[in-house]
Length: 252
Ligand code: NDP
Ligand code: 8X3
Image (cartoon, rainbow, N blue to C red; front, top):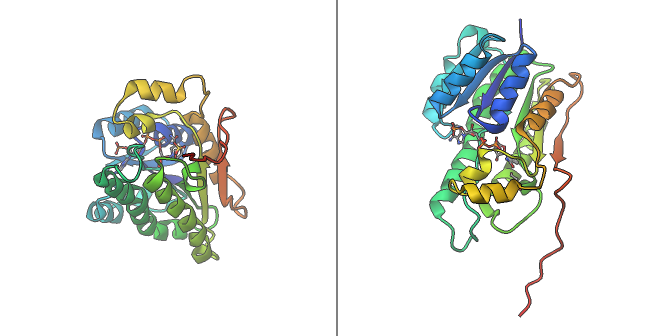
């Protein structure tokens, strides 16, 4: 039987690239996200290579997540992998003036949505046992502060600590957990963050040779295909063009 992988946020960026990478290797896929047309297109594209189950799901909707996961078809019921990828950043304004609704959305998606998929799918990963694994999408923003990161970075710091804590509880089950912490990657992420501002998107990535979604997919494929006795706890990656800036000093 082919291994099965559940991906949240598979309609673009890292999630879609992961679906393509794992399909190439014959993994069965459960792909989820809110945009039904994109999910269906991806399912159609990959269905010649492997079994694909598209699930239109908003990770913030706990009841919908519970129903969908409780009713997974038998052939998708034992999971070898979960990629908790659905997530977003909204805005870059300073905390003191930013939109409180954006904070709610980031907390509900990046934290609560990830908690729902993790808790609801863990029994199915444990059924698989040795070799199963979760890859959570953390970020360098969970490790390093920068202006305008406030709640986005804090949600990713939550994801990092939750990932490490999970490992303690899962000891003995064979299930692995990795927090992947990428830096600048080119995807719709920045269009979403900048409210669709294409010029700002172009300026963010221009001349920077950012990481591409396919690079992330290859990294996750490597993580989930490590020998069953190896756990990659966390992995931070940046494009070569990105590094840390000096500590900022405000002068009167
Ligand atoms: P994209 O914007 O390309 O993809 C985000 C995905 O998340 C989409 O498929 C979107 O699907 C899904 N999503 C968003 N909200 C929800 C929701 N409420 N329910 C279900 N799905 C949702 O961004 P990336 O691929 O770049 O980002 C993926 C992850 O990686 C995120 O968690 C992000 O924080 C993280 N990350 C990104 C970095 C970057 O520089 N790009 C760097 C480090 C981490 P849909 O809209 O159809 O629901
Ligand atoms: C996305 C990376 O640096 O834009 O998580 O916060 S960054």
